[in-house]
Length: 84
Image (cartoon, rainbow, N blue to C red):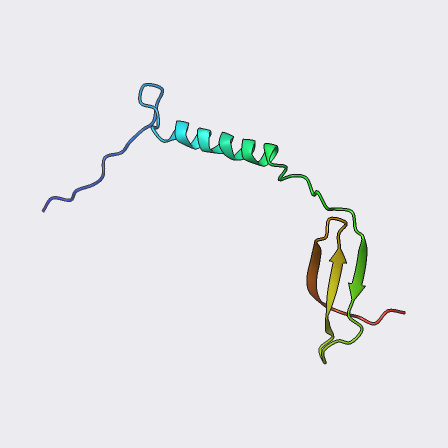
């Protein structure tokens, strides 16, 4: 009975990995996209106002709304704990 095994491939300078340049190109494109698209910047980070629900569910779950100057808002369902 003959057992077939896969040949072992060793990547050397004489036999480089054919996928490595493609992987490096994809990484470079991803980094360029993040840098030039403003992905790292939060454009509407200034907070215009906050609102929280006065009434909550029996478990204390209510809503938080953060309003931004550019007209966006962020809705966050959260546990509301009565303040002092």
